[in-house]
Amino acid sequence: MEKNTQAGAMSRSRFPDGFRILKGKQEYVTYIDHSSIRAWYSQTPWTYEAHFHSAVEIIMPLRGEVVYTVEDKTYSVQSDEVLIVPPNRIHTLTMAEGSARYLLLFEPDNLFGMRDMQLVEEMLKWRKGTWVDKSDLHAVHEAGLLNLDIRKARKVLGWKPRWGFEETVKNTVQWYAAVADGRNPMAITKEQIETYCYC
Image 1 (tube, rainbow, N blue to C red):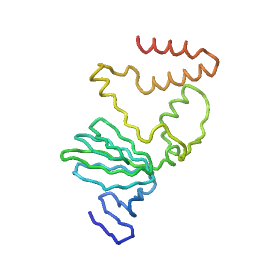
Image 2: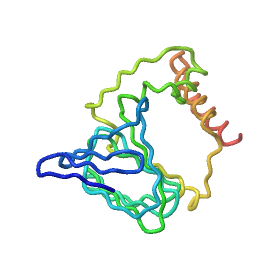
Image 3: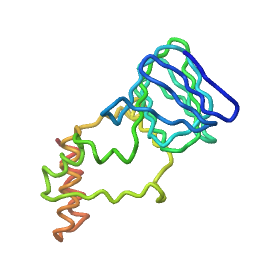
Image 4: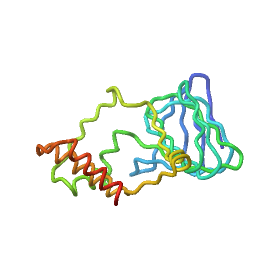
């Protein structure tokens, strides 16, 4: 890795598939031509200093762990877990010896411009319509960071999902569609719980 640094100037670190460009703590994510996603695979122990960028960052350890500090919270991300870091959040990451991970970066503005919008396409299979992107990056969000993991439910409760992606989307859309058409929400909910429990 090569570094070119000057006081108050940008630093540029060379990686096998491109550059990492920093100005202070702000990183300017570079993308390969005609692409809006960067993906890195690494199995080299490494620590990235505190930084932030406009991209959404997704970390997926394949083995071992990656430790993230996002603002004031620390997360130990294990294999089979996914951590999503929202844009413009100061964060550090350390990858332990013997670990391997994928790291993905993409600009949120490009999310709805991607052709392969699996969720939207799946929803429109069950309810005719069109969609318009009205997202506001400056609005208050449900959570600053989401870390979804069902391993504890599997281990402690012996739980496992009965529905896959397509069945889950279908039932979600059908619930909202039925309510919009005037059906009783409680009745629909009970029907879907019974279907889920006895499928």
